[in-house]
Length: 509
Image (tube, rainbow, N blue to C red; front, side, top):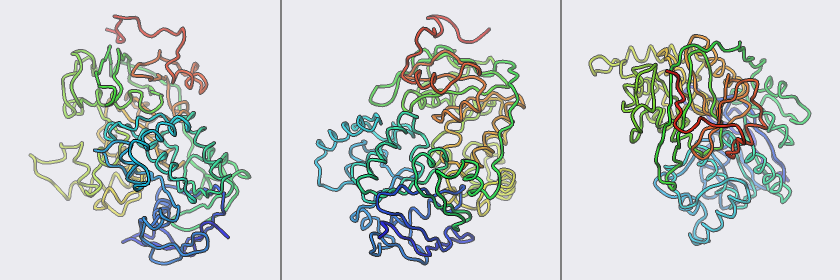
């Protein structure tokens, strides 16, 4: 008897069919992948299984018995757990309080804190249970979701992009945990765009395209190219990238210090680097090592550091705010898409105004002009959305990311800082986004990419830095970069390679 069985599950929204007569089954102890490009209906299908979305038609069975539609509590009571791509956490509460809410009253809060500490160490996902969620990076929030699900010892575990912002070491530990759960009889539904991970972990896969099942395959008998073709219906675009031709210095960070209480984040200590026109500089590191604080400092958020710490095209902007930095050509694309880069409840054309106040006329909105501009960007960047009036929250993660990137790059910036550019994005869309960053570089812009995807950094960047404990490693050139070296440096062990000497300036005069 299958652990999970879907029979002709259908879900329609105005103007789009998210799932069209989807049928699939998952055996006890099986790790089953669900593949598809952004907007293929994967996340909607997972929410239907978990009871968050009511299907228009079809049947869902768990161990042969019908699973109540639109009732997450009933699903949890029967042993179904889910880790969402867009997290479901209360930001004003601590990690332990968020986990406690999901486990009822069978554990006391102090005992849960102790259990969380043990679990985070066992699974290789460092996390302070008493830290507030609003101070966590995206990667750390993903750890909260994973630990919350794993502590429940589920019979059916649904994972929607669980490794998108985890470091390679954490991914290896998670895979061992998932294999152990499967050996114990837990069934796992695994949604991911990382095809090499699917091949390493999953026994079978169901492929969706435009809401319909188009293939059922055994990933280990396929290649990543054949899986990508099944998802996209065509060959994924290849990244075309010529050697960099670095020009004038566009961004200088000189001995930047950011003081943060340890329980609220990671202090930055004497961070220095140069970013030149015509280059892509990467920043690698395990989540929670100062990336969030560095991005906030570059964006002009929070208390300003010492004067002279940040210069754009030679001008000191350390004490200026986000609006003035944007006016000077700096654009930042954050990792938090909903809630920071976009407002879920607003239509796309109004989301344009979040970072583009120049699109108003003396403070007055121009809806027709904004709708035309938004429609143009949706078409140019292949964003799957109904139209400019579609709510930001209705887009899949990948399509929302394409919209945000389109909005920022439309301003022809001189410096772009982007965090986790292809988190949760399918292989085709990821290739397009990376190609746009390379094209931007070739046009003379300077690009800083902060990512926890080593493959992405190695394929995209002309030079690389590693951040650990709020400190930056020496700069690695293209010929010096390797996954092994970067992985070792993520622990702060850059050995005899000397960082800039005390009192030295990172930026040329």
